[in-house]
Length: 70
Image 1 (cartoon, rainbow, N blue to C red):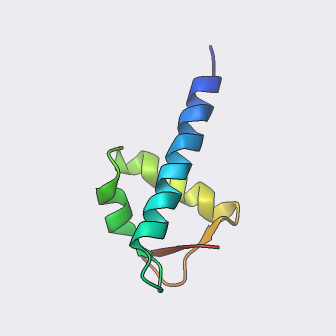
Image 2: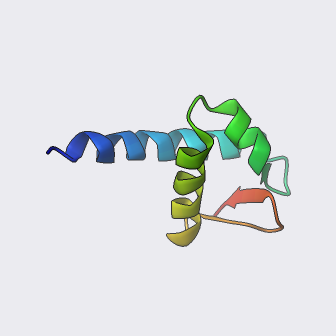
């Protein structure tokens, strides 16, 4: 069982989520629902990716439902 493809997909998805956050952030963070709506992936996969970015310190949540890149 090769896990490298999954890891690479995760990196690409993280990059895509970060780009969406940058595009959608007008100063107070990007709206979670807009991030999810703008990327063609299942919401649970996107939620995992966003949670990963939050837990590793790449992003933070200035207020509920808003995601901001550090």
